[in-house]
Length: 138
Length: 62
Image 1 (cartoon, chains in turn purple, red):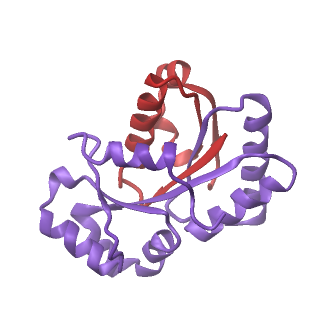
Image 2 (cartoon, rainbow over the protein chains, first blue to last red):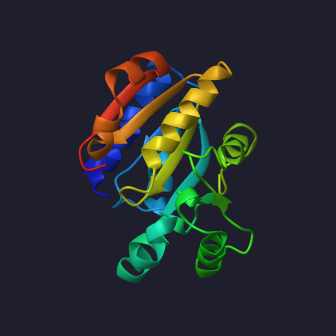
Image 3 (cartoon, helix red, strand yellow):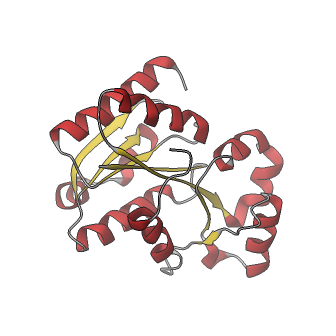
């Protein structure tokens, strides 16, 4: 992430806090951004503004995970590293064994959330993390 | 305000998850805002933004 983009994100975070102060500010970055960069940006804004840094959630696309892991391991690994919660998305299109294999491949012995917005799976777990959980490292 | 980051490759369902979470939180009386990279802008239609978020910003390259 470049300096100008990071600065823009920090400015927007602070602007939204000051002008609207929502309960939650969701950030949806492009696929090229990794979790450590987002953590830095979130932390920068707290130098002069008060807000909480919630969970960093990384989604992995279950049906195509294997191919993406083969093709772009550094990028996918950078998104997963440091995430508070990893969810295997679109599980309605895949089998249980795929989810288990992804958890093992990513080294998340604690498990990952099986998620499907279509089938309403895993949403409650994510909501629980948002409302009652805390982001790690802050 | 709590900042929540949802990361992942293109097409992994980030927008669908965020939209679902915003709607569920709204049903509990909680207010949400979004900062979205411009690739995902089309998935946030004006009606959704008007009805469910207090602020929406779209950033180039983000």
